[in-house]
Amino acid sequence: MGHVGGHVGSLSISEIISRGSIRGDDVARLARDVRANGIVDEAEADSLIEMHEACGVQDAAWPPFFVDAISDYIVNQAQPEGYVNAVNARWLLSRIAPHGHVRTRAGLDLLINVVTAARWAPVSLSCLALEQVLRAVRCGDGPLRADRGAAAGTITPAEVALLRRILCAFGSDGHVAITRAEADVLIAIDAALTPELVEPSWNALFAGAIVNVAMTASGYAIPTREAAFDATVPGASQPATLRNAYRSQSREERALARLERQRVEIITNEEILGEETRWLADRLSASPQPGRRVSPAMRGVVHVLATYPEAIDGEVGTALAIALDRASVAA
Image 1 (cartoon, helix red, strand yellow):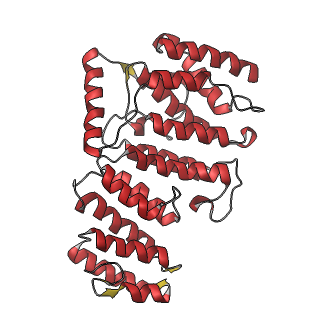
Image 2: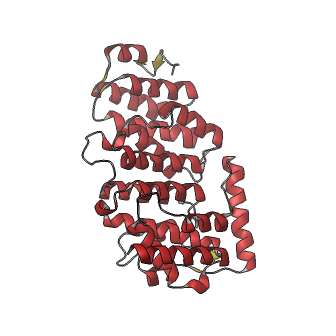
Image 3: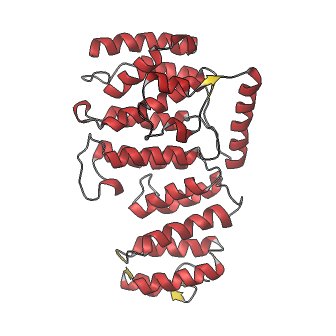
């Protein structure tokens, strides 16, 4: 297999780029070669990415092949095998999102697939995927709104499902709390939504995420992300259901949780921000943007947390009282 502009297996990359289209027989030949040899180095992966970006006409078989081939390379061929570290994450982002925005839907699918397939990946990859939904909500464009099917200020059921998929993918290797970085993107999405047009499933997802942060900050053991965001459980965002998903932790269990986060940081070489207590208190007590009321989703979070104040950290509890008063006025 060759380098960018040369050959990948028996296929001339420059020839395909010059014609501007990827045909079905091209994909079949590439699939045959990749099955036999794999994508074994960065140059070969770059060749496929260059071809993907350069060819505006693509057979329907190309995007799934492209996503699987590059995912397999970065997760299973590049070192450390089975994980994605910060160096490999930067390589991927420089190719599919050089300016912070993923350019194509296949690029977004690739990003999510890498986070899903890896045992651990930097939280920056998860956040970039979440930010593509933020872009769709805030600006009404990007790969999720290529068909212009929804206006800025709205979120679709499919986009809420995608957020749930991204969040569950990052925490797929165990009981991993929603990180501050991920929650910040979710809060930004909520702030960009037009309150009168909010999709109901968004409120449930948002409540699950922020309650997860609050309970983690208060020292509770957490469920898996799949359990925390299980859309098939009736009343999954109701106070009793959310409360029953968490339990008190011993001092030893809290220490083990900190060690687990440190282990992930060592593997990925990317820090997972802590100090959730002060951060969450600041978010709960923050005033809405001028001219806006407390959002329905944030009101839901506040009311859920207010049902069991004895479980909440003192600093968060003080902020919660402020938020509860503000939410009551806005109701």
